[in-house]
Image 1: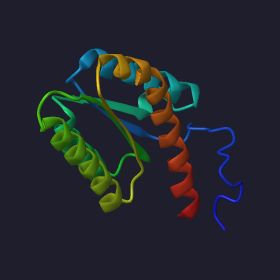
Image 2: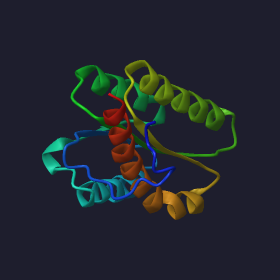
Image 3: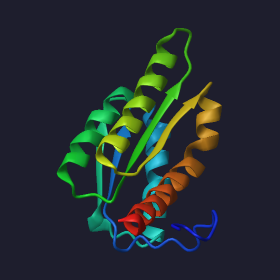
Length: 154
């Protein structure tokens, strides 16, 4: 049985992994903070700077195609999606949130590659700022843990 420690990841060690990050520029103050927290956590987990690739795209809808391009390179053990979608007055919020999330999941499943999805979907700027650091850290930890999981499965 895989993962016999029943939910506890234990100490995460990312030294052997290569991680790709796709960051949306829309709501860039928030996504920059997401990236900063995520990047710092990856380094703290032992991922080497040279093994972290970072690209920026215009918005959340563009994140999946950049993830797909990275997945096709077959150079990464895990990917991370960073973005921030803040609800507005129109249906656009739902469209962007649903389509970007579905795209991220599809890429992960199609390529059997873990993708930590830290595209925030929030009601307002205050909620985004309240989550930007913790979700960046979480994304890094999820990426490294899932890289370990898939590595152990083979």
